[in-house]
Length: 132
Image (tube, rainbow, N blue to C red; front, side, top):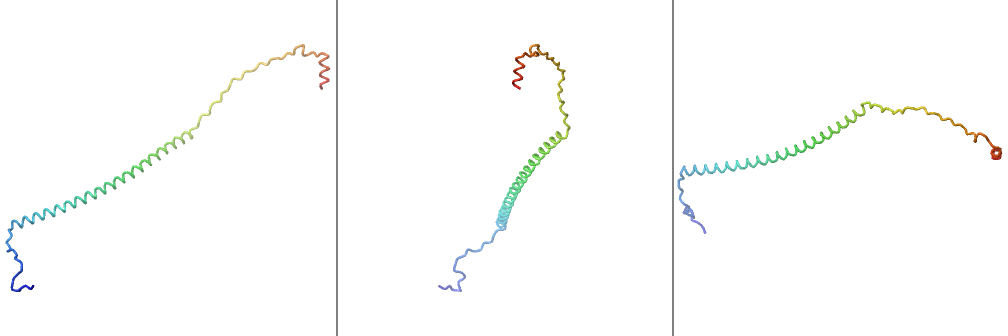
């Protein structure tokens, strides 16, 4: 089907109405508000994202610092223990006094040979000669 070129348009278009300046201003204001709210939402999202990332980074830095601090505290305690042991080794120890027992002179007991043992009888003398 061919349209006649004489006809203006095959569809019925409504007639153009003149738009009010007030309605145009309302539309522009609504567009500006919606665009600004979108920009604000995106900016706040970015801020919270970066804030969360920075908080995570700061937490990891804090944990690393705590670990280093614990290591330093352990090393300081070891140094104190070593200094204490060196100080105890460096101080001259007083030599323990040897307990001296008082020496008592022993009384020598004089052994007095009994007369019976001093005298040899003839039978004892002959026995001793036979044994030798």
